[in-house]
Amino acid sequence: MRINDYRYKAKRMKDGKIVRGMAEGPSKAVVDQFLFENGLRAIEIEKKDSLIARLNRITLNRVVSERDLIFFIKQLASLLKSGVKLNEACEILATQQTNKNVRRIFYGIYYEVNGGQSLSEAFKEYPREFPKLLISMVKVGEATGDLYDVLTETGDYFEQQYRLKSQIKGTMMLPIIYFVVAIGVAIFLMVGVLPQFEDMYDSLGGDLPGVTVFFMNIGKFMRNNALFLLMGLIAVVLSFILIKKRSYKFRYALSVIAIKMPIFGELVKMNNLSRIAATIAQMLNHSVPLQDTLKTTYDTIDNNVYRELLVEAQKNVNGGDLMSLAFEHHYASEIVFTRMMGVGEKTGELAKMMQSLSDFYEEDSDLKIEKLKKALEPLMLIFVYVMIVIMILAVMLPSLTLSDQL
Image (cartoon, rainbow, N blue to C red):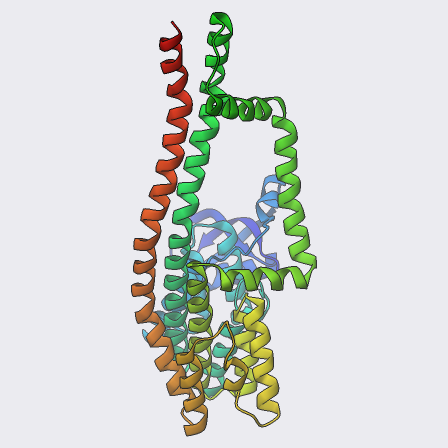
């Protein structure tokens, strides 16, 4: 549903005062009804459309961030618990949004619900913004009349996954920041500092040390070919994005590399296995059939190795086998994951075992991430120190050589 901006002039029914303002809605008629429901009788409603407004609507990625989504789910659950009607709760949450693009989407949800659609159907209108897991769980809550509990549990699930992902991203960003800073300092010295020694030595007729000449030549090459290097970097990035988008084999290879990376591979495993366990537990606890659960879990995973494992698990279930066999002895899985899943299937308590696994990974994540940080920090410091020492030698040796020659 496309939401437009409307400028209105209306009379407040309780005291007859003329008020002006902005409203958002799919059409003038709907805005008129919206104003009436809020105690305003419309006098003028004019659609506000401009080039800036159109440009503001253009978005490359999803508009509703994970934090916005978690806030929306938890606040919606709280409002429903307080006795607020679903359509009124959606309106309240839309009204309080400061980001215009997010507000338009939430108003779209409100108008869909206010028009008689279910909340899950309203979410389906925005597939990029609302995950399939959320839609499936809300549909279950609507069918069982237990929407508040489902929203509460789903909000907790998304919050847990967001916290884990943020921790992992923060840990993986640490070496990248160290590396970028070190390379940035090195480029500055090679391009901006070392060339000054060349002119000095040329005037004095002295010979530069080999390490200084090496870095000066690199700096000279970078200065002379800056445009080509920049264009080459852009070409490499665009090619990577294009190949990744079009080639499944390339995406699969990246997934394998991510899992088998030294140090970081363990984090990738933990993130994906935790999400699989939490999603299966979340859906089975609300009596969603196992096949539908595996399909929805497939959509929550980005790594193609784990996606293929879930497809294999579906085939096993269809053939009457245990889905845990798909994960058994696989490099992307862990013994504790496979064993607990297998025990759950054999005892008929798969939901309980998956929940236990999810709790285990949540508790284990803090320890693993802290351990990884402690291992990474000295390694990155050594790298930075080595880079600094080499660059200091490249800068200082010419001065020492010059004093000897003089």
